[in-house]
Image (cartoon, rainbow, N blue to C red; front, side):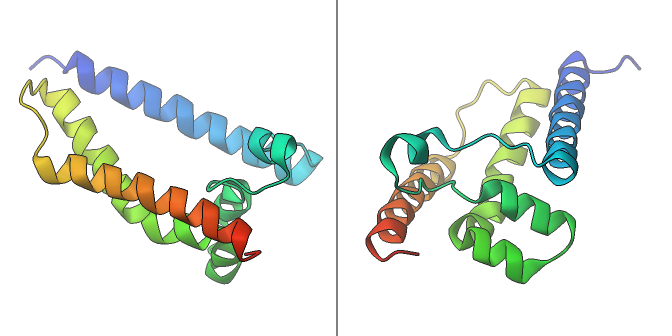
Length: 127
């Protein structure tokens, strides 16, 4: 049985993304190098994703309190974001031309709205 070319592309892309993330983590931990938030640099405000590097590094160490402190909204929403990503990847591999179920689109919009709301609240309340 021939390997699915879409699965191969997805796995190679995922491996590249994971490798880049691990290299970034290593550069951050060992050399103190990081990519600054352009939104925060320009405005002085935290974006909804500010703290994602600290969150990921804390999760690599299985330090949930530190991950929570870095960005509680993203920590809480990560399982839902992962669910949508996995379902999208499965549709891609299966070459499913059908539109995703309505609830997925609604969930994606709800997650986007929640992150925007988090970005507003974290700046308004100084979180």
